[in-house]
Image (cartoon, rainbow, N blue to C red; front, side, top):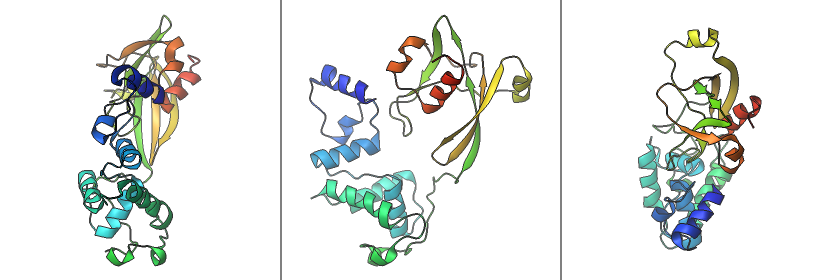
Length: 236
């Protein structure tokens, strides 16, 4: 993604790197968090950064269950406009080193006097369950030196712009598992979610995707799961 981003800056922007968070988000692989971090730290734009550590600090200080949108709005309210880069880095470090998930160091916390919860955990309204377990189905479809892939949304919050195998929801999973197209099962974890990944050697129903030459796969960003499956199958 860094390579694609650099090429676009050179080709489309005349080699001038964008200096605002809004403009930065138009580049490959740069979402809201990364754009805000770059803009505030490198270019002093007064825009707040929210990562998991900042979210935890805000939840505890306010004592409120905040949605993702409310968390970003709250971060903007607290932001120091005179030194946004320093403030954002301080907030991230505060969550990473003092306001930790377990055994927070409230005794040395510089914002303790304003903290509503005094170290108690407050779950976000949109928080995912810890160690959630999910099942997904992937279609491994290749022929004539090509494999069918789909690209994730370029503005997505997770693995933005990366390529992966098509996913589908089977109407009768038991029949597929027992059928000739079913290949194998994988275990895969992303952040706090553990996935059971079923792979079928077939076209994904209703998913068009794009045929990608196998020899070009090393030149494009693919997800870790896609790489794991393609390596196990001997395709790459």
